[in-house]
Image 1 (tube, rainbow, N blue to C red):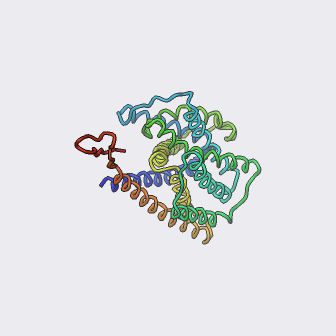
Image 2 (cartoon, rainbow, N blue to C red; image 1 turned 90 degrees about the vertical axis):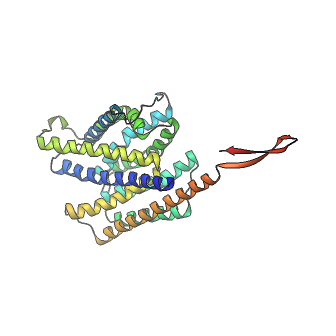
Image 3 (spheres, helix red, strand yellow; image 1 turned 30 degrees about the vertical axis):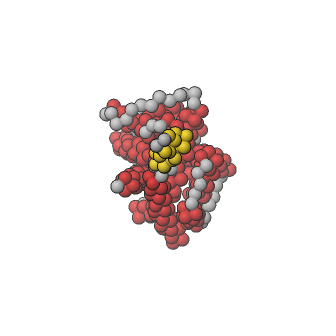
Length: 331
């Protein structure tokens, strides 16, 4: 029953992040196109502020206890920097490069995550998961290759973003385990520092003119909805990275891209070739296989751990006239 509960919880985290990301993507599209709020980094700042307020409200409701962090801890400082800088760089890459080029560079995050997890934590992939991973990357590459164009500055931003994005996804889980804390508690500790970092980076990303933007009731409504949706995305994303793994979060991002393509095709009349839609569908199928294999492997690992909980040991040194003692060691 415990394994079934864990599987249901993992799937709920993935579904939570999946649907909230789809929602915020289309709400952001409305903010940029219909509301004409053309400041992606500023919108990210609003997202982070709303997320921090949401986490504070949950803290006041007794949903979690705060964690004491060492501000001088290099691991903590690193995750604060990464959380603050990755999103503006990501939006700049998307703004300056074509969607195809952006997606191809996004694929590079996956092998970098695998490399970092091996170098930092000695984590390895099974053959089945590696094949699923290659399948997801191959289908997304197949879907994106027809739309590849970039600018020199966009190339620089994308090249910087890839290793930082991979480090961010891996580091979040590592810091959470280091402090043995909950996702909400770590969000509460990291977000204030990340907001400062993001505010410093934003002027390098956004065009001038934000002070002249007219805040109409319609604009306030959609930007506010975007902030609420972003809180759900950040919370669910940190749940996935902290409890399931960085690689799962990366691959979930690939399947979200594929579904967003379908949504844009039906809702916003975006045009895609049959090959692009076929590649997106293939990526969805491969991520389903990857999720199935991962959950099956986790179930096997927990079953083996349960079987090996106690080990009999003959304690010869404690032998007495009654013979050697049998001691149970608990791992």
